[in-house]
Length: 450
Image 1 (spheres, helix red, strand yellow):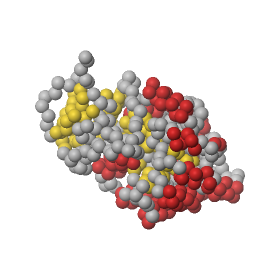
Image 2 (cartoon, helix red, strand yellow):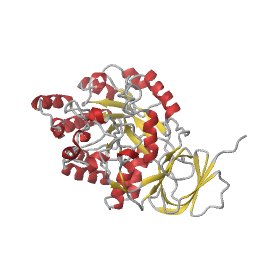
Image 3 (spheres, helix red, strand yellow):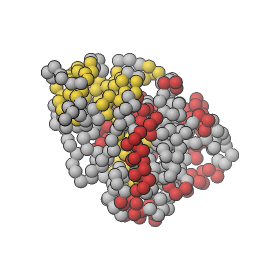
Image 4 (cartoon, helix red, strand yellow):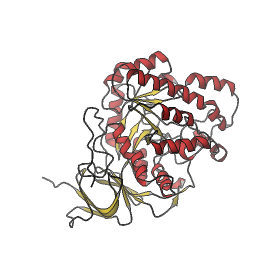
């Protein structure tokens, strides 16, 4: 029988499950971490990484992305997006259902899983999308991290804004419900008020704080009524954060994007429609409140909402310009730069971008560096800065709202299932990730503190 592949990481600064750091060694056999210690004996492994001066973190799990396949591959596809993930230290992702065809049936879910098995360099999972009439599919789909409801900022079958329809979804089943919480009636009203305005900055007024708060209040009430597991996607406003600070049941979680932490309405003047996303960018005050809510645990983790469009599409005049921006390549360096600047700690960043995501979605053996855990890891350089450059991006859309930002914490190595998928600027396109599992019944493997 062939021997199990072995990888040895020597003398990195390892983030332990306790939140403390240890300069030491990690041994990996097959897909699994087998030893973590200050010093391990000389290795007989196939490959050894001299990681002195680098910091070893659990691979990031991005729980909200739009990778555009099938049907919109001119913007992105599963291969290009997973290459971008590998470069950004993202070892797993959860993808949304607004592709063509929509991911609203088991057949469409199976198709995505098959495509990903052939194309994805990192691990993957796919949401099932709610429509007004696919409740049986929502209850039966497998495997999926949860049900995605677009309450607003959507058109066609995925727009689910009828109160009775939304309540019916909450009333049946136990699966996690993830909600894009914007009130479509409010958005429609505001669009009429601002009809004819072509300044993209008006986007933040059309889809305003009130539209977000109405929808978040509605689903929070339904979650409490049915004791239903709720996740609020891309929380963007101070008023929503304040609401959750006062009223957040233990079974409710929320996320925030780096865009809503680092960018605000001033970005429209600098980058125009490249700053347009749903929900929109907000005011500097919202940035501050969201940061505090994240640090206090009111917001549980970070997602990018990676939603690429081509530069030609973005160059259209508002409101014809599409909403969305890429993010998987820059999210980890953005957050680690904030940590080095003192806004948070490296351990907090790792929790928000890996550990807390694995716990929220019941993904076993992810989110920690400990024996028995999957070897999904990233070695980052916290000692050097380099700018975000358009020509170096691997996302097919080829741009970033953070172009020119000088960041540290760039990945040097990314490891997926014990295999090196990214090494010092080079992608190993032979690596393939695996489908994530979401086991609501099995307790998560809790790492022992080393």
